[in-house]
Image (cartoon, rainbow, N blue to C red; front, side, top):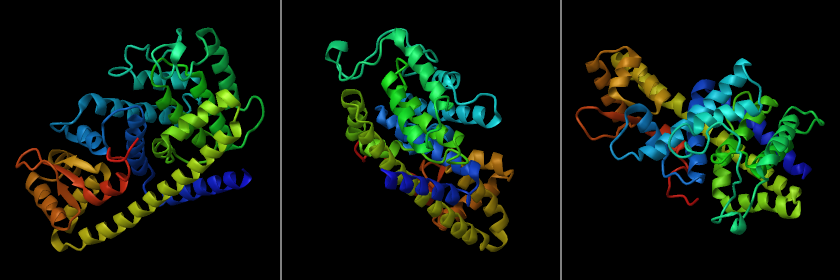
Length: 352
């Protein structure tokens, strides 16, 4: 177990170093959206990364709007929590989790299940009623005492626990309490990333474990359930640490691939001669947005329409931009290679 913990901690540190090579806010923009798609897919949404980016930049026909709005609300909830902690307005506490939950379930799926409020009725996991459920969380009168205990643990009121072990234990305890009527899984996974920032493992929440949970969904649920039925904390922590290392290594590969891509593609754009200055400004907007409408490029680059369209055509010739709409008007462009790097294993062709 010590070896697993060291390997996971090392991989997390390497990720933080690799991420520092890129613009931190832009990297966070990309990672948060990938995480939002993955964590929502675990809950059963059919939205993809492409759906989310197109919805944010120019809602495209055929986009599954109910699902993509669920994903977009997760982006909002996560950024809200990050900003509250960063500015010192709120620490990582029950109130922060309740507020994030309210943003997550303010409309759409879960909006009728008391958003932002801890449950006052019994819930269950699997089955049609508590009698045939896979798991029945604590009764309502035990929810707040259990949550108060969890909050004290987050603040190290009992003793100092190594960061990754603390995150593993806190996540399992949150999922066991299941304090909301809906959205527990998404808030519980958000909690992991926030803890790693608060406890100093990452400068920003670049790390998300949802892909590992998605690929190992059955093992994930079984490991949590064995804590409840057999007290198998060692099995859960082993599963979690392996996931942290795998997720951190994959995120590092993404950061390094993006860094190399941006250096290479920017050099190609800057070699366009007289067209390079305007093409570079357009490229920077495309890099920041990943998917963007031509009208937004005009707005954000402060260039004229003809200049933007000519630059986008040059980026298409270079293989950097890809036009998605197939229309002459309201065109939508994608930074093809950047999208492909981020989209690894988030499309629905990969089993849950």
